[in-house]
Image (spheres, rainbow, N blue to C red):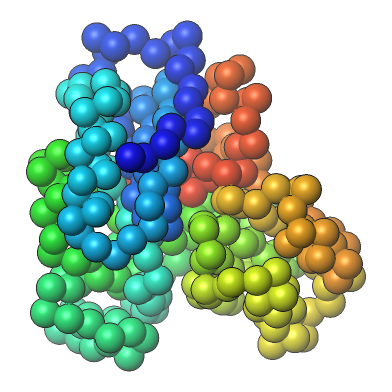
Length: 283
């Protein structure tokens, strides 16, 4: 069964106020994380470790077990947003986007089956669309629990959150979100997006290779350009130690200032939840 690994219930959380709250859910890459917030503040959070499996029956069983034990999931909410993470997505600039070709854009990046539905996240601030697929079975499972849910790809809030940071800075900045054995790498110059891609890695050397490859591709210097880390990575890890040998300016992303967090959440490594906190930008 999914294992509860992190829990935060702030004193501001009031169960009977749930109709005024929003529920955000992140599913994928061995995670099931839920946030309860209003438009200004985070009130509750729970994170579960889940078996990372493509089998629908396993996903259905594990979600059902979590649903039965987690009282937060049974409350009524004003809005529910489900954020899905998998490797299948591609950014298409608005001037090049044609709705009838949406499936074609994605099929050039990955094989698609008859069960794959094409979904679109609109990114006006980036003048682009995030095109991704959702398995019909996965959507059906999620809608059985959250029938009014809006869906997003997990890369969408991370892109919007990092752009929000970059628009107040000058120069190049790289952001890396680590989820299980996948890494979403984003490169901005000021507020302009230069690069976004998901890589799978199995070893520290793979992780390091992909980061340094982007430095080389854009002729940037790892001695001077900062790299910001988010997701499932800690300072004591081998990945961090190896990366620091080449990249001199490494920081962990902090909780964004457009959503207030309480004292209990501030005790956690907030960089691990930057993507979900940034879902507010998708409203």
